[in-house]
Image (cartoon, rainbow, N blue to C red; front, side, top):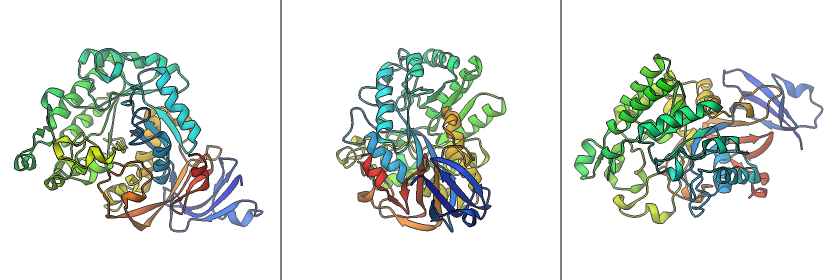
Length: 438
């Protein structure tokens, strides 16, 4: 069936409307469309639901190639569809590293083969994400993957001259450098946020200044060469202030925050459960509040999951030996509802911007169509803010199970996801179209 009629949906601005999808595109957006239809469209009643543009994640670890035991492009795409995403940006720290046109094209084609959502590879800034020599930035930009975002995420581009050259290089094709802000000499052996809790637990601390120093340096470099820098997974109140200052000066900086940094604090480490070990670390309650405020007022541009799957053996061990990272795709929307919508810090239009429109713009994906616009591709998600669900790690679509929310009831549920007008999720269940694509 090539047409769908979505009835009684609430749009981000608060108005009620029907949506007609024909041949993968929005054909009509208006009230009471059901009265004029001839019955050929499949009707979905979305009473009580909010209809949003499909979510875009600018920071996803899909692990393929090289760590398919943790995740694959296919399993990550299934997790993304379940979470309401219609585009994922695959980070470059794979094995081999995505630092050549060949590797990014492999990831891009795996995403096309899966067909559940768009997979946009992120290219490495430096060869082997080692921080010494620039990777094939131009070749990756000119490849079939059309890479526009580059990051050594997992490592900081620490050498200021290398960072400057990267910022200068990507200007020629409108690219952006996404920086993992971590001053390495201040974080050697660090296990969690430096503060009262780390002192009590005897774990080596990760000071906020290690993040803030790199953010400050890089916004000044971006200003100096008139290029774009994006700050990955911002976690500190000081970092928010630096970005706010830079934007006030007209510097081309954008920033992201993860759902877990909007909700969880370093006090979770008291359990010594490595599920809460992430990079950058969970910070203090005051940092969490500053991050929420920064996201609400637009200082922080987007929400990005930093979805970081790991097999059990890498997380179910002593804290010091455990890998950094946690899952995020399937729970992101619910965490945003809990922290930003239910608290009245943001409205639905704000959420649509932070989770869809703005990440698409920053990543250079806007040409893919990211809005509920007649004639545009039908990438959308329907959420029911009145429903809740309990996270069960064994029912997640990811190959890994390292979620910190297992057994926790979360507000809001993704009930439908459409990619190019085809449902990949209906009433919270993956469709036959999903299983047919692997």
